[in-house]
Image 1 (cartoon, rainbow, N blue to C red):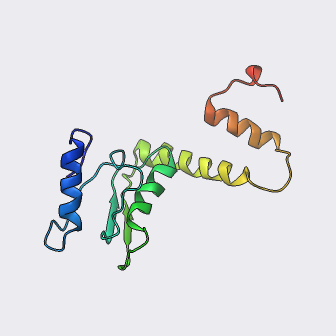
Image 2 (image 1 turned 45 degrees about the vertical axis):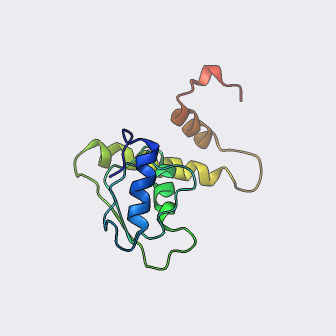
Length: 132
């Protein structure tokens, strides 16, 4: 298991054990503890238990198992609790952020007033403090 309280030397030891053919079959890791460049290409199943406000965090966690060298098919399962803030608010914000990011790289340099207002809402910027 790797979480924020585990020292770096212990994290390295746990990861080495997980990659070993005779090591542990299961690795429990919080999304925020992985380092840049972490390679978990030996993993074949990912269970996301805590949806994040920022969808890129989940994508990065999934990418750790989908690195070069991965030979197995990877199964990804996301758990969402019904009638919770996860379902009603977190997923909505994830979807909205992905839509806004996708719209930011289109052709042309104009932005509809609705998209501009949505961006202000996401970043919590008041209309009076922004010059259009």
